[in-house]
Length: 159
Image (cartoon, rainbow, N blue to C red; front, side, top):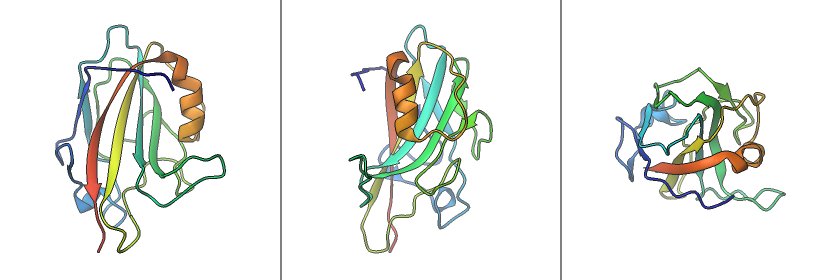
């Protein structure tokens, strides 16, 4: 993926950047996606995609990728600047739990604190992509259209 610097800001009312993700948004809680907000999108933005990835997960895939994908959401119009908690709009992709939609943090017991990157990618066009794309399939489709990206990082640890 090309370098896509951006002045976008991504926030969440439930936790601060590098803050602890409340249990409500994890596999140990209600497992609902947190509210995500963004601002400062690059000029010409016509669509968005959102990804949540845990690079600390001890998972290496056959294609050489690593970490655990918790959420892939796309076909988000350019006039949207927030996702409400438990969002069911737009198009859900496949996560590494083998399901469509959001699957909250649930690192292995005793594995320490994991970081969760909530990426927002601003695109130069609207997308009409089919449901169920993996993160890597989505990135292949949208790479030529990424104008900028930014992230919010949350942490979570199971004892």
